[in-house]
Amino acid sequence: MTSLLRRRTKPESADAPVISMVDVGMTYPNGKVALADVNVAIPAGDFVFLVGPSGAGKSTFIRLLIREHLPTHGNVRVAGRDLLRMRRGQVPGLRRRIGIVFQDFRLLPSKTVWENVAFALEVTGVPGIHIRRRVPQLLNLVGLHEHAHHLPTQLSGGEQQRVAIARALVHDPAILIADEPTGNLDPVTSWEIIQLLIQINQLGTTVLMATHNQEIVNAMRRRVLALEGGHLVRDEGTASYEREY
Amino acid sequence: MPFVRFIGFSVVRAWQGFWRNAMMSLAATATVVLMLVLLSGLFIVITGLNAGLAFIESKVAVTARLEDDLTSTARDRLIAEVEAMPGVASVAYVSPTAAMERLEQSYREIGRTLDLGDPDSNITLFASLEISLADPDASGAVSSAVADSDDVDRVLTKQAEYDTLLGIINVIRTVGIVGITLVGLTVLFMIINTIRIAVYSRANEIEIMRLVGATDSFIRWPFILEGVLCGLIGAVVTIVLVAAVWDPIQPAMVTIFQMPTAVSTQFLTTLSLLLFGVGLGLGALGSWISVRSYLSATR
Image (cartoon, rainbow over the protein chains, first blue to last red):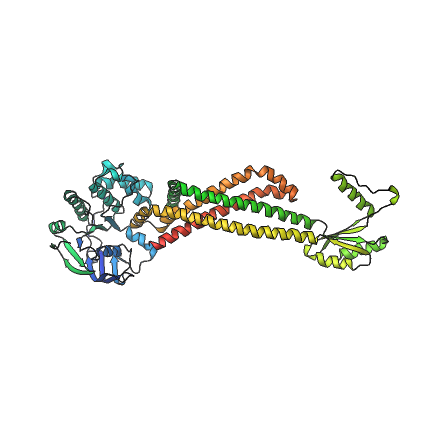
């Protein structure tokens, strides 16, 4: 495992947060306020939950971090980069520093497990020799080396999510964003995925996980950011939360 | 090496994409073939007529029929005067005997004999000056200057034939260009739609590519090359078709249009280059428009 992801003994910079939002607001063209005056600083190496009801602004929060959207006002910095000043041509470089997984896995159904992971390397111009070395390492990490030549449809939901995680890690990102990664999974499988995310976090990768799963948040006792109506209503370390979203 | 990898990646993806969406790709390629066949036809006709025009220009442009009683001194003086006129390339004297021999020769070429009736009738033709022009536009000035001479009975020019042929060429060229443009726009539309369907059918792939940090070039170029592939295959098919009918066409171009053989042998090469250029250009333009609009809309 340590050979797969570079262990960040002093992740990024202990002082500079790997994610920071200062007075961030985001209003969509139709007038809907998605985020309002959000201030967040996430140090490198943290494991943070992002919670809130549907429409609270979680997706917008994530889209701002990967620079899919720009804030209407305020400042966003990710992995040392000022996203407002970033040129369009620099966005791919930012996204290689961020791995992202989704509730619906977003695997390519016509490609095998191996090809799905390799695809993320091929499309960023990584040489074939590195791809052939890197993909088996990642499949070992997520425990899927025996399924390398299976199609996603031949895998369980938990296994598909593991493929998505392996794909998200191909560039050894500083941050892993998991958007409802257990939303489609049964409780046992959900805990397996959480264990995998903890392992990845212990190697120094900052993990931001958006979830509705109250049981997981309470059991993990990690920092929780709670959004409601676009406002950050709670930011507590080792918090639990009782509200059922 | 990164560039070679990029090219290899783009070409492989374009080839896979072409066959993944085979029906639409082949339909777009068929419209490319249709347009390029029309373009070939127009190019053949226009080139032939231009060659015919050049042939007329190279022949006698002005003929001056001389008075019967002209002395050789006066004739030589007139020749010297005409040769000195601006735009005149050369002047040739055709005697009545030579004119008669030409007439008889032209009858023999069509399998007939010139019948002058009574051999004692002593029919003769006019002597004439055949004036070649260095500049076809000087035809009017030269013919009016020659007509003013007292030694000249009548002036005949090829201007009317020249103008008629030029008019025909202009009409064909205009109609052809309008037709080709309309077909070209149809081809462009087909390629745009084909690539758009390809892009939308791979929207998930494109989204994943963006999320994992692929640059726009890696996303865009496989689709552009897919459009180029439609144009390339269309051009190759058209060239094969033209080459297949080239044997009967070539002698026709030489005889009908008076096209020099040297021009006709280069013609297929020129036409092939034109077809490749138009095919690849339309394919690239159509797919570029399609991918650009999609990437801008989903950025």
